Image (cartoon, rainbow, N blue to C red; front, side):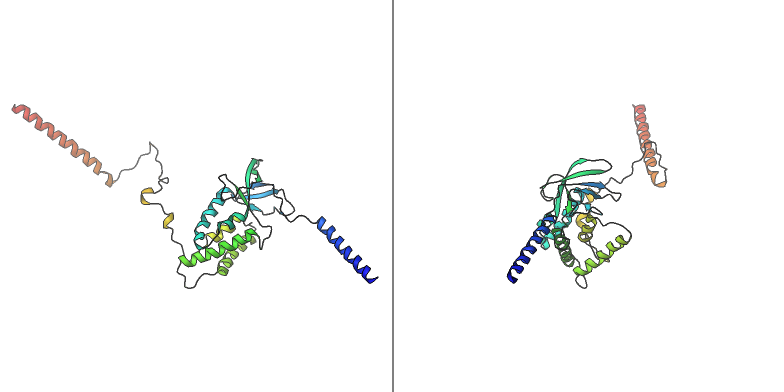
Length: 263
């Protein structure tokens, strides 16, 4: 009798588990499309998404092609210190533009192309299904670790910079924005790490400075044709030079006339 009860209890538990799992949503994300809006902060934010079960669009941001390119460029120096580009590639879901839907909104659809290999402009949504151990969390961990390693190599600190120091300072910045009601965009979260330099220090930017022969001259103002420039003492040398030329010409004419008279 006791064996029958135990067997019945085991069967009942198994049936309950089967029923429970049948009602649980699938853990795999079903991302097919999303609608992104262009915000007042000049960033893109998700307003609608195909998988509403796994994704909350409240404060959900997405990277545009320009931002992706900038992040890839900032990650490139970290390769020398051990950064694996595949971590960057695996941290995001790729989307391409399908169409505009009005009111500064666009509909994006999933694509199998990767942000590193695609020649087309792509949007990227971080894979935050597992916020602590997922691909995006691993990406943040990696760029933090290698950014600290690079800074310790390039800057002569009294004591080596630590990961905790970097994370604490960035956390303070984000908390300040949070208390002011500002949503942290993923682009700002990533670049805060990739562009981090401790206060009082700076990295050499010689490579970014334009060469002397290639200086940007777009900032030179255009003058109107009828705009007059007031003359000063430094500009009178032109007049003096013209007067000297006229005197020389007159002298030469006088000499030629005297020669004619003698003949």
